[in-house]
Amino acid sequence: MNFDLTPEQDQLRDAVRALGRRYGHGYFVEKAKAGEHTSELWHEAGRLGYLGVNIPTEHGGGGGGITELAIVCEELAAAGCPLLLLVVSPAIAATVIARHGTDEQRKRHLPGLADGSQKIVFAITEPEAGSNFHRLGTVARRDGDDWLLSGRKCYISGVDEAQYVLVVARTGDASTGKLKPALFIVPTDAPGLTRSKLDMEILSPENQFLLYLDDVRLPADALVGESLDAGLPALFSGLNPERITVAAMGAGTGRYAIDRASEYTATRKVWGGRSIGSHQGVAHPLAHAAVQVELARLMIHKAATLYDAGRDLEAGISGNMAKYAAGEAAALAVDTAVQALGGAGMTTEYGVATLLGAVRAGRIAPVSREMILNFVAQHVLGQEKSY
Image 1 (cartoon, rainbow, N blue to C red):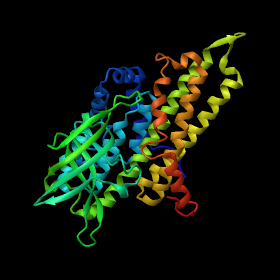
Image 2 (image 1 turned 45 degrees about the vertical axis):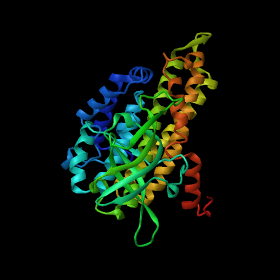
Image 3 (image 1 turned 180 degrees about the horizontal axis):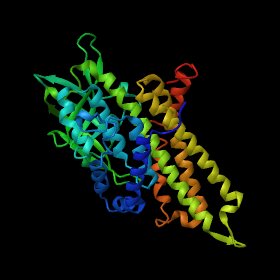
Image 4 (image 1 turned 180 degrees about the vertical axis):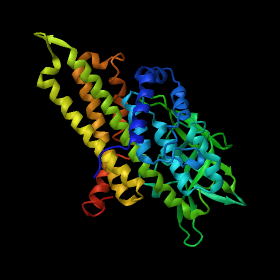
């Protein structure tokens, strides 16, 4: 068991950390409050090769895995710049296309995903279906050689920044008469595709949308893979990277909050010339939060290692545990940091309360803590399925 990063991974961590600190949390907050995107940071990260670390070298990427992408997600978040679209575009879309797309789809999309010039967002969640993808109402049906997609999607991140959206729909299985999932690469300017921005109580430069698909016509090659049989494996291939990179972003955010609070409490003096951090009532909660974040980081590393080794079943268990642990740890760390800073913790200047909404959402999305506990109870503890 080796807990050390390779020299290349260490160099990647140091380089991404330096990039994130050049921009910093002030930049992130300024962009979010202005209703703008972190385009400068995104394009520089792409130019330096950080967005494509998990994409095969033959398509312009770094040839690494989810371990490397998790490093990028964590270090940018630890610098105060948690970029949600890292999870959506390089982690989900690039993985799905690299593993299950056709040769033409790989050539068309992966180089742009690697250098940041192209973004593909992901649309699975629906208003009625919630966490149950078996109840998806978005349907794809044949019309000659084309496909027609109809349905609704909600909480879809970054549609206004992306050229394409990877839509999960259901198609008819001629052999069984049942519906089965399929993935389609849909241009965001396709006729029949409209969107409505959701107002969220989260400070973020990335927006959330409702999507409406009204007989969106797509050519045959919009279907991911060579046939409909690729649908289910392609869908699941993107979920583990999603959980792992979301967890990495949460762990990085937790590190950022603890660092901010530790710096403040080590220098803030109120009683008798001693720092407030010398008091256990202040230091112990921060230390507890730091332990929880570090434990989450260990599970993230395990999940990413298993995924990159091709051990998908084990990575699914570890990825869900990592996402659970990091979501709890990040929320605890930010809340504890706010409490340690007192009134200053609620100001924009000190840069911790600005993350409260995001870390609270991290306990819900992309899969809720309760659904993860259901998964662990069933697949680890051998309990009867509860839903």
